[in-house]
Image 1: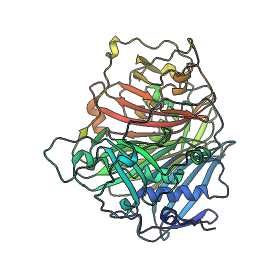
Image 2: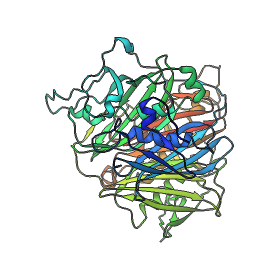
Image 3: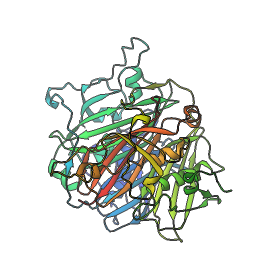
Image 4: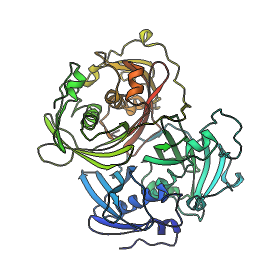
Length: 272
Length: 272
């Protein structure tokens, strides 16, 4: 079975099925400086689970630990259903290359989400509409080109580093695939790693950086997302602390009509 | 090797070492309604890693997936060092009982944290001092008795359910071990699951509830925590959304002098 659609995101996160061992391949389109864009890796892992014949329910939680760099080329995904309950499943995935050490370690929870009391306490942040917001033009890495970023607030200003005072790490921006693609769980997990590093904002400079661990929760199941039928989200991201070479990020991904689709948090390495 | 100290939290999260298989036992002191307090389970898993002879560095990130109920009694911890780098380690832990299915699945990142640029963007929330805040008196489950909760804001009001309008899920409270114990990574991870369920606050009633996945990031290493030398934290917790039987929680744990020690997020099942 080969999942294949015309969109380059789907090409980039394509997997071919095995029994417990699946295969994927890094994508030139989603290449970062020293390896694949972490969001593409996370989405590839999630795709293997969604496509798995034993899968039931929709993604609820995904944690991805980036253990070592992934080299250009093929990789294997060892997929294991650790525990299945009546309405939830617990999975683990290990990404390796050429039989080597684990490069990425992930756990996921899938759930058949049943009707319940529903209440969204959080409100979508105010933002200028997508159409009235300027696209972000300063694009370097290959993977960044695959997204249409439109900063409402907190556009990174790397050229202008006036003094030593830390700048705000907060950003509010529209994010869509550059070639529009309907938002699904795969793009949500990729976009949850698509915020620029908070340290770049706080320091107003590029420094060596890498996501170490990423967790995303999905607050909409496949039915909810199908009903939303959107191709972009309003994202907000912020950091609380940078200390001893590691910093955090928390983020939210909102549908334009005010529905919270996913929340995400990560801890990342930096050198500064 | 048996980790043993007089404090009941250390008794409750005691582990005995194996090679890759460690042993632990549920604690009466930290019992919840249908199983052990999830924070105690998480702390026991973290303790096995901290005590592991191959461990280097301090806890940076811990994700615990609660797959199935844990019965009263002994359990095994299958501990695996998945990948070791120069300054980080990636671990996975599976908790089983009597050779059965995995009941808890965890991944952890440890890091030797090197000096760097340091900046805490977040500020400690204003709060009345611990000494001037009333202890929370309505205590039901055994594990709740092990904590000294002092609500500054958002004390759960379960008796008074006036109408159908959702109440705020936000809480701000002091949390310490009832028998004072110096805050370390183990108590931070336990306390990150010690907030009352957000759904109880939002609904103003107790409903069936269970943490499904918990992630905690540590923003202080062992040296930092030793220097803090505190026995309680100011905790804040909130939720963004309850939908189709699952709701989120995000939280912060602050030292009284304003240092952010840990951030935590979880997704939980509820029936309402």
